[in-house]
Length: 278
Ligand code: C2E
Ligand code: MG
Ligand code: MG
Ligand code: MG
Image 1 (cartoon, rainbow, N blue to C red):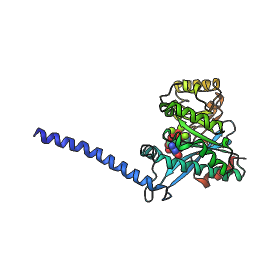
Image 2 (cartoon, rainbow, N blue to C red):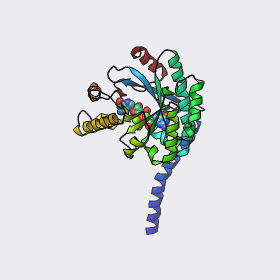
Image 3 (cartoon, helix red, strand yellow):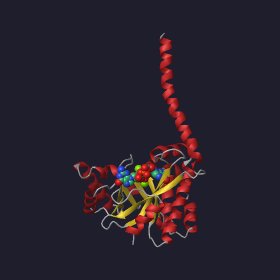
C-alpha cells in the first residue's frame, strides 16, 4: 500500500514537471519558427532628455506574437531563447532590424540613437566587433549611434573575454550601457574596472522613490556614484511627472518610461517623433 501511495505521489510530481517541460518544448519549437513566420517585431521606446522631454534615442524591445495566439512576453521567451541557444540568431536579427530602422529614421532627419538589449549568452561571438562594424557601415551609420545594453550578469562569466569584448567594441565607437543596474549581484568594482558609457537605473528604484525614503536615498547614492565615475545615467520606468521632476532635480539627465511613451510599433513611434522630435 505504501508503495502504491509512493508511486502515486511520484506520478503526481512528474506530471506537473512533465507539463511544464512539454510547454517549454512547445514554446522553444515555435520560437525557432517565429523568425521565418514573421511573428517577431520590434517596438521602440523613446529615451529622452528629462528636462526638455526631447527624444534622443530609443530602446528596441522584441515582441513575439504567434499566429492565432496572444502576445508572449519577453520575460517568458527570452530565457527560453537564451537556454536553447536561439538567442544568437534572434539577437542578430534584432541588431540588424534596429540598425535598418535607425538608418531609415536618420535619413528622414531624426538624429537619434538605437539601444538594443544583448544577452550575456551573445557575448562575445554573437556580437562580434567586426560584425557590428559591418552591419553599421553597410547602412552608413556612425558606430556612436548604436548602444548595446548588457546586464550585470556579464560579470559573472569569463571576465577576460568580456573585458576584451568591451574594450574592442568601445574602441570602434559603439557605446555600452549597463542595464537593470542595482538588481544583479555584481560588485561595484566592475564600475571601476570596466569601461561603460552609462548605467540604466532599474525601474524598481524609480517606482517607489516618491513614497519611500529608502528608495530615494538609493537613487541619490547611485547618481552620486555615477557622477564621480563620469558615467551617464538613464532612469528606467518613469511613470509620473513627480518622478521626472525629482530625478531631474537630483541631476539625472536621461530617462525612459510610460510618462513619455510606452514601447510603440513603427508607425506609432513615427507619430511620436513627428510630435516631439525637432
Ligand atoms: P529591459 O531591457 O530592462 O527593458 C525595459 C522594460 O521595461 C521593457 O519591458 C519596457 O516595456 C518596460 N518599461 C518601460 N517603461 C516602463 C514604465 O514606465 N513602467 C513599467 N512598469 N515598465 C516599463 P519588456 O519590453 O517587457 O522587456 C522586458 C525585458 O526583456 C527587457 O528589460 C530585456 O531584458 C528583455 N528583452 C526585450 N527585448 C530583448 C531583446 O531583443 N534581446 C534581449 N536579449 N532581451 C530583450
Ligand atoms: Mg534594456
Ligand atoms: Mg532595464
Ligand atoms: Mg529588465
